[in-house]
Length: 312
Image (tube, rainbow, N blue to C red):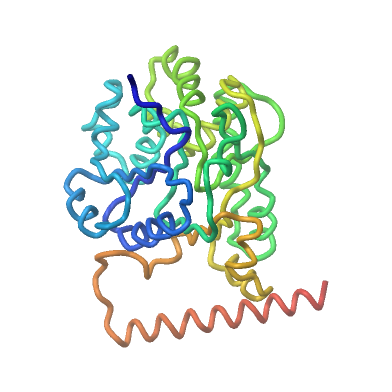
């Protein structure tokens, strides 16, 4: 008698620089994972021992990312380690489905933090079909149009329009993120069979063409329709830039209030650099200067928010 696969598993692809974030994320999973959804973490081969030591006592299966590479002979391991780590991680996350742990998986980045309890019903819509995250990215586009950074809309379109054109879809630009990503193996398989195999490509080729793994997934979902679409908004409140966090803080949003609408929060690692693991130690003077500079930026930004509120 074969073991029945779980409806969904949790999965994170990470590495040592994000160790502190990974521990924080895993602790939040342990606290809020009320239906005991299986949890997997892949790391570089030489970091497996480190992560098993630091996550000791947390119910998670830690394994080498090379197991995922070996599941697809079309991926050249040598070439994968010649590309930047960010590109490689996109390939790893998108190829996890080949291990056959479940038909569906929630892809957690290390900077994700759950803030309320969750179970399978938060992710599975009906008959083992997951919800699909589909929206138009207006929250990010509007806040950055008002407060920066500049060119966010330009970069947003550059990560989506080429994939939409490659798949052959016409119409409005959809956004299928952000982390955590809720994915079905059936959708990835349909992308492989309908797009990659006929063109004699692998997923690394696709990412090198346009580096947005969740857009490749979403456009494949909409175009090939391997599963019925049950739409959902983003699962987590995602702070792409620190000024988004400052706005919410100025408006009085706390984790408890956000938990009414979101399962968690993403404190983007691109700006929360003090959570890096193993970074070179800064001097006391350097740390003090950084703290004062950041405090000044926060105060200045909140004053700007109030000023704009009065002149509008």
